[in-house]
Every structure is written in C-alpha cells, then in structure tokens.
Length: 58
Image (cartoon, rainbow, N blue to C red):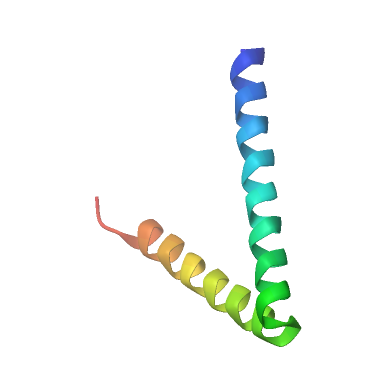
C-alpha cells in the first residue's frame, strides 16, 4: 500500500519537474509572451482531449 502511494507520488513529482523544465526551456528560447502562448495552446489541447475522453461513448 505505502509502496504504491510512494511510486505514485514520485511519478507526480517527476511529471511536475518535467513540466517546469519544459516551461523554463520555452522561456529561455522564446521569451515570456511566446511561452505563455505555447503553454496556453497546450492547456487548451489537453482540456479538449480530456473533454473528448469524458464524452466518448463506451
């Protein structure tokens, strides 16, 4: 039980670290405005995919 919880927490922490690194690299390469646009587009695509998966027929 504890092992599964720790593995899940480590996965979440790894995912957040990768996300932070992605945003930092975008900021360094393209600047603030472009980073906000890139992240905004990615969030919209992710939200659309989640919406489609929730609405998909079984």
